[in-house]
Amino acid sequence: MAAENKKIIELEAKAKQIRRLIVSMLAEACSGHPGGSLSATDLVTALYFSVMRHNPKEPLWQDRDRFHMSKGHCCPLWYAVLAESGYFGQEKLMTLRKFGSTLQGHPDRRVCGVDVASGSLGQGLSVGLGMSLAAKVDHKDYRVYVLLGDGEIQEGNIWEAAMASSHYKCDNLCAMLDYNGFQIDGKVKDVMGIEPLAAKWQAFGWNTIEIDGHNMAQILDAYEKAKNFKGKPTIIIARTVKGKGVSFMENVVDFHGRPPTKEEAVKAFKELE
Amino acid sequence: MAESLYQRDVYGQTLIELGKKRSDIIVMDADLSCSTRTGVFAKEFPERFFNFGVAEQNMMATAAGMASCGKTVFVSTFAIFASGRAWDQVRNSIAYSNFSVKIVATHAGITVGPDGASHQALEDIALMRVLPNMKIIVPCDAPQTRDAIMTAAETPGSFYIRLGRPKVETLANKGDFKLGKAQVLIEGNDVAIIACGIMVAESIVAAKSLAAKGIKARVINMHTIRPLDEEVVLDAARSCRGIVVCEEHTVVGGLASAIDEIVAEKYPVKVRRIAVKNRFGQSGEPAELLKEYKLTAQDIENAALVLAA
Image (cartoon, rainbow over all chains, first blue to last red; front, top):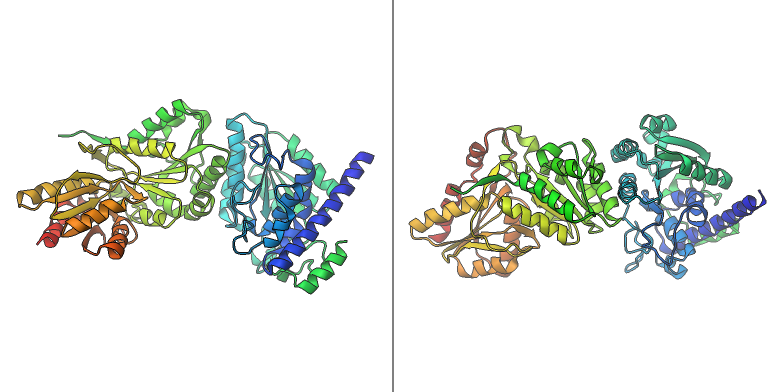
């Protein structure tokens, strides 16, 4: 129990560090998407620093677990965890979205640790499905994790992939839904409602787990349950707060796609100490 | 009379041949495996075949995920769906990363016939030609279909291979197939006829008729649309009085546009385009439709006569 608590405390500290990196790279870039990067930070931090089998020194290791960020606009989060894991140097983070940088506004294969480009919403669950089927063909035991946005699942392609993933019984596939409740045009429920969420995924043949997406113990428990569930893919529906960790960004739709100013970044750092 | 074969049959057989030799070959289809002939691969290698039902977008992005794990993935459906329905998935998930996904699209062009306009892909070459990294092959007959499939399997990166629905006559003496290297089937210096797909056979008929009238037409089989054999085009532009370009495709954005772009920039000559002129297709038998849309040997000959005059 003590070891478990220690792990959780360490992951929480790591998540705070990732949030600091996100805020500073976005402030430096003067463009990008803080809201959804901060809301999914705990989910992705747990993956890279506790759950996934991977080795930054061997990024193309065939047996590595795969992660794909289908909501590609939240790549500041992905870049931060990759840098913090050691896939590339942290100094590179400050080149986000700049001309000549490998850290594009939406991720692509130029980045060490990124297997497939994303950015056009709705395609990433299919990409994960392809990785999952490849594992089955090769009789490999790696797992595949795909991060989805809540607005993103309005895309029809998601439901095509959902249908196919359960048809092929892809229990090595785990999707995480960052359910922060906001998209660019406002609240998800006002723009295009997606409820009842768990029932929808269950109807498409998925195992569903609902958690608080900022509670590290619940997050780790959900990943463990997903790993042990056989016969169906699992989706972790994680209730999150858009802009989590920075009080003046939390639940403010404007911060979906607006970076903090230099002054706001200083304020944010104080909260993330 | 030369033999006539379905390009699709040869595609299916070639997939089996590849499947036996290489364990990295994966095949996908979207509920058309009987028509596209991927079904024969499915029978032989069920563990390496995936049917995604009527969901082409998912199939394309899934193929990208597979390819990222080192697989060579052949995906098939009708050309209209492969190029149109799933274009964004082809662009962002496949071509952008230049994954080894080989899109083999069947039932292209007006000769789909009775199914009518909704199923007659007249825009697919254009839609694929605008994508960086995408190699495009339009084989002229069944044996060349095998060449195209083998080449795509051996060459890393994204491919679009365009096949038709009807049987096509096998053309003799084409020489070796090389990606991006056009085949000069008939020599001549009065006028050049550059064609792809089923229009190559029509071009040969036209050239023979022109020869009887004393006009020497050069017939070029431009089986690879990208990368295009610029040298063969420029040589035709320099040595002939004009170029007739023939394709079973809209006049916008396909082979004709590609030829226009080259000669306009580098060696302006007169070009006549035998292609579908800003119209959707319609139901009918292939021969009726080729006549209605002015895609026959006679149409090619008429255009060549104007240029050679």
